[in-house]
View (cartoon, rainbow, N blue to C red):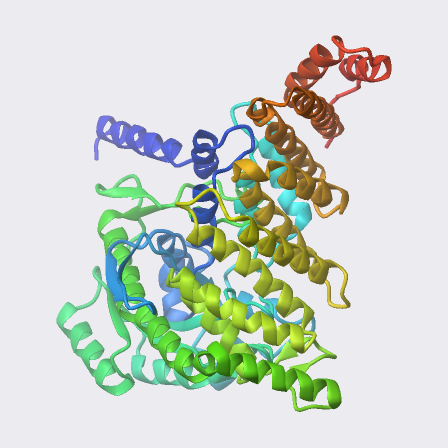
Length: 605
């Protein structure tokens, strides 16, 4: 390639790279959000994209080395990671109400099996990588190449928000904060969104003994160090990667056909180049960056630890997109659909209608007469056995949610919550109550005005969720903050519920579940709630009171941003507060608003 052509290609790539910067989704939310408020439709999209099937990836040694040689230091998993965000294609299925629906714009989450194992225990465990290495040192790499971690770390979340807040080109909104919070959903016993739906085993044509390697890995999958509350009823897939540059396609196809006959039809054939893509090659594109990067991953990018831009051949990207589509529409979704129909007949149907009410009444009566009744709930560890009816009910509801059958999911959450309340399974009850509210709002997206009875019922569910997340022996810091944020945003989207949303936000702020930037965002949103509803009341006295509340939360927002030492975000709120309090006979608050300009806002680390 001559120098002029290389310059042209590099300029084209630079343009593509700049268009897919670190904060692309933040820009999208900036366009769709108004001063921290988020519509119910946008919030539902965020939740739908966050709660998706999770697939754990385990790679043979040759597969990880194949990816590392292509420039992906975290192994073959890194190649699949971003392509699960937006799965290409659609499929039609019949939901549980016997209606034909179209599933499109679906997502999958690929995670390395090593991080799944290390996240689940506070003590060292014998990982599947250790087991396989002990059998044959050539099966897998002795050390996990991936740096992926599970769970949310609030210090890192706040550091990310801190970096973003100092950039004047971005509008800080609650939707952005919620989206980043949902990238860190931990593995827990009382909700199964984070449990793996399938294991994906990867081997390549570079493996001298592909059959033996694949057999050893598949036979070792039941030995993955999953906690007691995670079911072993997990689907297994395998992928055979053909090297386009070095190996014969016909031989690879023959090997793959034999694999299908030996290990079943849950296999996929993937054609990739082993050559590393560089600027010297045509038809290369910037490697896409996942829109669901965790706060830790974003901070590593901001720190500049990855200086070299990763590139990929267009043909490789197209092959991986086809693979992910096949996995989603020919493997995962049919599996979820089968499980939903089977479990609904076995566990949910007997609990519906009059029979279900009689069952719960009799079981509750028996449990009050005999405290040692045969329950599947272990109160000491706050978990159900994975093969218990109660655990299957939660999986059934979550699988229906991931299939976007929200009506059926709502019904199962209602059934399960009664059982959890009867067993004093506090976190299970809180999580199901939270999902009852979320599914109810998604179902009623086209009807913004909710009946008073339904609204009161959902308010009771919200209070129950928060009380059980916060005040019981097994409280959950992460889930309490998530519940506060999600349900508060849904309340904010209803025109007649903005006072309730403001009160809910106040509870979130004073519960101290968020860091300084998160608190500032909530203060800012609460101010906006009152400001936008000032002109909706014809009562003069009510409007005056609301105007005072608007000014009060305006001062609180200014103070919160000043405490973060970000003066340009505090300035508009200071000006608004000074304008209001200069017109009323309230000298103390007028003096307070005036003195805000004199606060030391020198940057802090």
